Amino acid sequence: MEKPIKKIALLTGGGDCSGLNAVIRSVVRTAILKYGYEVIGFIGGYYGLYNDQYIEMSLKTVSGIYHQGGTILKNSNKDNLFAYKVKDETGKFVRKDVSDIAIANLKKHEVDALVIIGGDGTLTSARDFGRKGVNVVGIPKTIDNDVPATDITFGYRTALDHITDALDALHTTAFSHDRVMLLEVMGRNAGWLALEGGISGSADVILIPEIPYDIKKVAAKVIERYDRGSKFSIICISEGARPIDGDVTVKKIVEDSPDEIRFGGAGEQLAVLLEKFVSPITGQEVRSTNLGYIQRGGVTNAFDRVLSTRYGSFAVDMVANGDYGKMVAVKNNKMVPVDIVDVVGSGMMGETSHGGAKVVNPRGDLVTAAKCIGISFGD
Ligand code: F6P
Image (cartoon, rainbow, N blue to C red; front, top):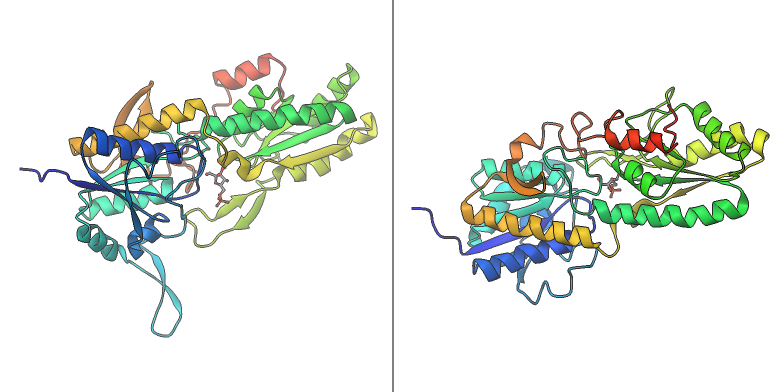
């Protein structure tokens, strides 16, 4: 007979997003109120699991955090315990598999199951701990909304609200100065944030990774608007967007991160070039704003609070059902378990691989509706 569950642990890994605290609250409340489990939370993701840094989680620990962005458990996106950076006898940094130390910590605390909330890197390690016999349940997180196994990830809708607010603000200053305003938004290789944020924030041009843009067509849209009396234009550009004859704009390489590339600067780069095309004709100046990490923080909106609650409580139900090695997903508005192996490491999550992330269909409903109302994609 299966040993009854008494204690679970949880951790948050990878980049943060709004809704993480709401998931933590939901896991803890479901574990305590529905199942009577004890709960501990490791601090700083896998770092805490390796260094045995944790806190006891009670109803009090998760009180007042529901709406807050960030994670009370802290995040790390560099601590892969299967290839951990340690110093050897000569003081040189080497990569070592220290996962057994983490497993020993779980045994020491008599943890029966581990709930892991994270992106591709974090869930790839979850898969590997599962293979070593740890009872793991994963919860996917990313503002990019590019996880194919699930219809929607928490944090995405809150990020869309930030983009909408920013575009609303840019409209008034663009109007006052007869300017072209660009807003660069996150999303890596998936254009969801730029697309839905751009539609919601009434952008005139939306540029996404899935549709490489022709700068001449972007300029033509701005000039056409100017000629018919709209002397300002708003462009929402994804950080992963690229011109038809160019490449993505890489800001930096983070070597010890699961995905080394950090995007950034696509908006600024386009602003400089676009001004050369439009200014001689319309006299307009072009300015760029990068919304950046604001998209990942702030008060969690109503939609994400509910979604996070569903993710968290379903994960604990999965623990109770012994549904290990799986990740919670939303399919047709129902919570379902999916195998972690089918999602991570196969290039299916956008955070580490560019092969199989859930990306925008250039001929899908959203792009079609946007085009119908006159939004240009520069194609
Ligand atoms: O995947 C989430 C995300 O916010 C992306 O949209 C962005 O490109 C990336 O993380 C930034 O990562 P970091 O926090 O390492 O700079």
